[in-house]
Image: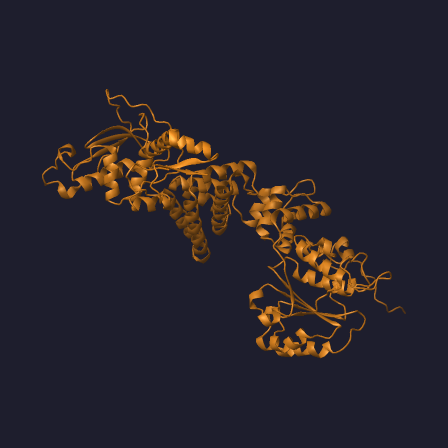
Length: 594
C-alpha cells in the first residue's frame, strides 16, 4: 500500500512572499548606491587630490601606518578605506606588492570588498565605544596576518570612541608592528583628539561639485537604461549637497517617478518628489520683495506652499539668489552662477538695483530668517515674516548712503547719471493726476487755522531748502527718497508738484506733506504727478555738476599739462581755493591719480 501523500495541485492562495523570477535569480534588487560603489581609485569622483597623493606615496614606497579619512556623509570614506586595504594587500599572479592600480583585481580584493577578509577587520565605533573593544584590537595586533600582507583595522566613526579608548590606542598607534595598518574614518574630525590626529596621515574628502555629480548621475542613468531630464538631475545633485550616496538614493527614488522607458522623468516630477519650489517662481518672489510689492509677494509665497514647496527650501533658494547677486556685483558678467542664461540675466538685473552693502544686509536677514523657519512651530508664518522683513529692508537706503546722510554729507548714489530734462513751462501749471494731501488732525479742529506756509519766515523756499530741512531733522529715509525720486515740476511754499522717479515709493508725497506740516506748523500739499515732465533730481544734478567740475578742471592748462606728463592719470577731485578738502589730505586745486 502506498502511503505517500497525494500530489496537491492547488496549494491555496499566495502569501505574497514569492519574488519575481528576475529578482529571485539575481538575489533581489540592489540599490544604486551599492551597485555603483567604486571598485578602483579611478572610479572615485571629486577626490583627485587624495588619489594623486596616494599614488605618489605607493610608487615611492612611503606608505603610512595610519590614515585618517574625514568628510561629510556619502563622499566615500568607507569605500576609500576598503580601497586602501586592497591596495596594501594587492597580489596577483604577476605582481606581489602594494599597488594603487587594482586592475586586474587581486586575490584578496573580492573578500576585502565584501568585508569578509580575515585580515581586514572593520569596526563601527558608534556601537563599540569602550576601552574593552580597543583591547580586543590590541590583543590581535601582536599576531601576524593569516593570508594577506598586512593586517588592516578599519574603524568607522572613530570620533565616537571614549577618551579612555583613545588613550589605550595611542601607544600602539604611534609604534604599530610592521604588519599592521590603521585606517580611521570620521564625519566629526574636531572631536578626534589631537594626539590621535598627529599620528595619522590625514585626507579630507571634499564634497563633490554639483556639475561633476550631475555628470556622474547622467552616466548611471545611461547605464541603467533610464531617462531623467537634465534639469531633474541638476535638482538631485543640488539636493544631495555634494554627497554621492545621497544623490544615488534620490536617483533611485526619482527613477520610479517615470511612466516607463520611453517616458523620461521630468524635472517637475523630481521637484515634486523633493518638495522643492520652482526656482523661477522663487526668483519672481525675490523680485517682488525688492520692489516692495507685499501683496503679490505674500500671494506667491502661499501659492508655492500650496504646490508642495517647503518654506525652509523657499528661504534657502532666496539665500542662493542673494548670494548669486553678490557674486555678480563682485565679479561682474564673468561670474559663474551655474544657472541658465535667462536666469543669469535676471539675477544680473536684480543685482544692478542693489548696492553691495544692501545685498549683504539682505543676506544676513535671510540667514536669520532661515533659522526662524526651521525652529518655528508654523514654518509658513515664519517664512512670511522673513519675506515682510525683506520687503522693509529693501525700501531702506543703502547703508553707505545712510551713514553719509547722518554725517551731514551728500550720498554718493548708485543710479546712472541722466541728462537734465528741459525746464517745465511755467504757464499753464499741469494738473496733477495723483496727489496726497496732509492728513487732518482732529485734535486741532477747534484751534485757530495755522497760517499759510508762505507767510512763515522759516518755511523752505525751494526743493534744496526742503532737503536741507529734512537733513536737519535726521529723517534719513525721507531725505534719500526726496533726493533720488523727486523730479520737481513746480515749487512754492505750501505746494510741491513733482514727477516721481522710477521706483519711487507710492506714499512718498503723503509722507513728505505730513513731515513738512509737523516741522513748519503750516499745511503743505505734495502732489505726485506721473504725467508731468519734471527736472532732474537733486542727486542727478549733484552728480552732473561734479562731473562737469572734473571735466573743467581737466581742461585747465596746468592740469592738462600734468595729464600729458603722466599718461593714464585722471582728475579725481577738485577743491575750491581756500576750502578745506573733505576727502583728501592735500590743498591742491586739482588732484590726479595714475
